[in-house]
Amino acid sequence: MAFRVWPDTGPTEAIRYALVWKHRPGSLAQLPNLQAILVLGAGVDSVLADSGLPADVPVIRLVGAGLPGPMAEYALYAVLHFQRRMADYYAQQRTAIWQPREEYLARDWPVGVMGLGVIGGFVAQRIAVLGYPVAGWSRRDKSVKGVEVFTGAAGFESFLARTRVLVNVLPLTPQTCGILSARTFAAMPRGSYVVNIGRGGHVIDADLIAALDSAHLAGAMLDVFEQEPLPTTHPFWRHPKVIVTPHVAAPTLASESEAQVVDNIRRLERGEPAPGFVERTTSSGAHYIALDHVRALAAFMVFAWHFTHAWNGAPNPPSSAPGATLLPKSNHYANPNHEAVLPPRPDANVPNKSDGGAMKKLLLVIVLAIAAYFRSYAVGNL
Image (cartoon, rainbow, N blue to C red; front, top):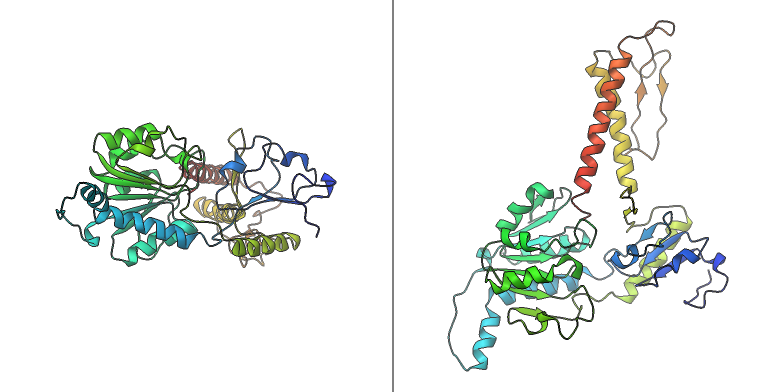
């Protein structure tokens, strides 16, 4: 497979895969035979911000690629820095003051991690190992060993209320943009801290500065910003309660990234799904749903048929019953061994009066399920 470096693309119709990081907006639309866009990082916000991004081309990001370990180290340093009052001791050193401060034990210093994906789950577990009470917040219900999990909008305020140090590892999506806002800070205990290693777009800067100035928040450690490099005139640089680092929480490791990109291309060439598939939102708000969601909805619809048929009072015949239609095994079901049997009509020549009611109930169940799915999706892609 030939490899070309932009802008020396050669014939654009020959390009099938694009490896990108902060590409020029509109440039990918010039590749008519593009089959996949492989992002050279875990974050995809800069790619999805391209209004000219081909709508029918899958976007695949890096998963892991050496990022979880360094991200966990950065987060752990921030937790220790605030817990052990290091900012206070640095200030005392400048004026030669020898004064021990009140100390807190790890068990009395609850940490909350926003986002429980590959990186967030790893960060949460690493911190929990050291004895901190760790909770995580995610859009979908997840199980992370040693971590108390809060889910969706219903669990967000309870998650914030028990958190002394909030570590943000969320991806930036339309649903999570600006999530670190005055409302979020107000739900946290007074004297709490914020650590942002997600994206700068998660933070409303003015709200964070106001929360720090009012002493509701005691400090913040920020590694990512809306504009990078951070302008020299930005108040974060000189705020006494803010620590600024230049987007260094986790460098992408070239060796692991190369191996993952090559493996993803090989998978795509074989017609197999690649890890890191990104759910996308069109300008109209409609979602491209990941394959596992499609499988789950398909399996549910099969279940819904049986449920509404039983609800309607008709027995479910065995698969060998005359007139039964056997749906073949398919990879499109969450359970590949699932076989669904559609019941035959009691008499091919006699209308079944219950069919209309059963169908209405079936449609009602499906509509409610799909509505519930997209309502949960709106909380964010966490």
